Picture 1 (cartoon, each protein chain N blue to C red):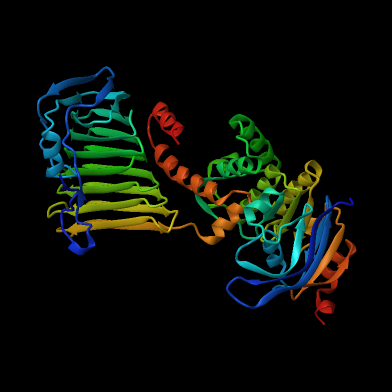
Picture 2 (picture 1 turned 135 degrees about the vertical axis):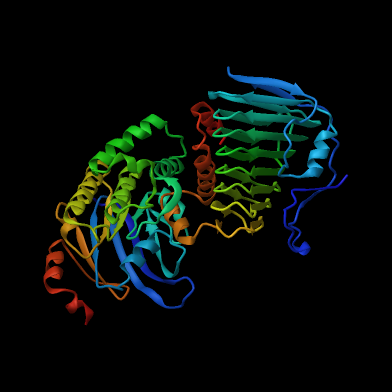
Length: 342
Length: 249
């Protein structure tokens, strides 16, 4: 079965083949993968048959239907307190095509940090995780996701959620290992001063693919989004980043920024980006910046003059990009755990 | 001091993409532990000489040979030359965003030795060395040379020199653009290198301030890509007094 996902909200020329991802030979998802949960006091866990949060998601309806067809329970974690400890969700994907569904609810004035650790026991397999969130007034949800999967693993990581007034979502994603990865996030910034902060870092090699679709949907006055993507491409790897800042009429004073920093290590890599700023409101500020390229000759000579080989130089640069994002993980234990993977 | 460390014979070189020759048959011999000074007017090819010795791919060697530590390095790549023990302190050190000064030095030492450094041992050694150079230790965690003042960049170069302990260091106008205090600090670093490592130096400079505390073994005057005069340390004062005019004829 072939399937379209990660479609941008405003289509561009078809011949660019960037409007959406077309995934071939999609396997039917069957059953949940193993999930180990460490739930701090103050967070309540429930299990539902279906999602209770109504929201769009970054990867879109087709992906939602695929996951829904697996009929897996939805694990809901909610809090009405400010929780300093981290909710840990350790996924151990097996070689089958599995699905996991999670909801994160942070009530008004509450705070929650969630660490999702995506690991696989097999080199090959398919796994899909859908995470929906709901952030109350003056609340803050931090979601840290680290992907470290088998070299032939295909992974779908779909997120979507809604913010109340002054509700903030911080999303930190590190894509360290795995073959084909499809990522998407939709943030409904429909309330005043709602905020999205996204930091993504990736390392791709061989024939790895990372296909991303991030959509910040602004209708709230003075809402804010900041999307930062940083990574390294090696060998024949491919990356496609779609980032849409969608300013709707009425979101006066909204600010959106997306920034990309990509290091291309080989001429055979493919790096594609669609930064989109849709604007239906006059009083907004939207920016996009990109730094894409290879190391310049002067920098290479400088590093080599210290005895650093070309291969080690690129390793160092790649590690630095991941570390820069990992260092922003607010929890020291998790940060250390992530840095050990590098 | 009889071991030949560096032997350059009839070296000719041009910019990689251009045919214009910059070095025209240059000969130079430096023995282990010696300190040589290269002086010359602007555009004489002093920095080109330093970069070419270090294997800078922006320059093409069109003739002659370079022997270092008894091996022909004329065709060697920069990283291999550095691993053999040659070091170049850059006139304009490059900014490397994303890599901290400490990480950079640690990676360089590990690449050179092929062994992983114990973190605390390295940190201790780095801290002690930074003290010698009056460097604020916070610089260790800052991106390499990014936002550093001119003086701090030069200190960072000398810090690398002291940490990497090469057998031969080329200092390309390390004193240029520095105030009196910074020159003194950098000079202390160079003295420390001579004292603890005992390596050889090739100092490219326009001024004598950086040389005051060093025993100079030889001075070479480079004009139009050739060494036109050789002398001892007293040559430096003579050049400072009379300039290069007599060598330009």
